[in-house]
Image (cartoon, rainbow, N blue to C red):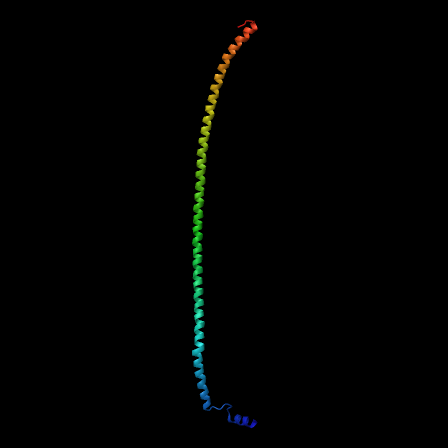
Length: 154
């Protein structure tokens, strides 16, 4: 056996290139082409399709995120506008209520002053009538008391 390796080493080549090499190379090329067509190309297409789908989904997600941010800004702006309008309306209602309060208080003061004045006038008339009535009675009582004191009987 060792002589066989030595003879190969002297000839200069370990591999003999005979006809089987070309047959094996041909089989290798055919198998490689068939495997590429049957296995590699569909796998590459699948990977590319998944990548495209993922990138498409990411793009859609990015667009949706931008749309959501835009909608949020719009809603926030509308809420701010509504709050501002509501605040202005609330202030307008408060001012209107204060104005009505002043009107009602002024009317109540006027009516109470009028009622007080009317009551004072009635009290004055009642007091004058009471004085006049008492004056008449005082005169009559004075006559009666004077007659009794003087001993006159009536």
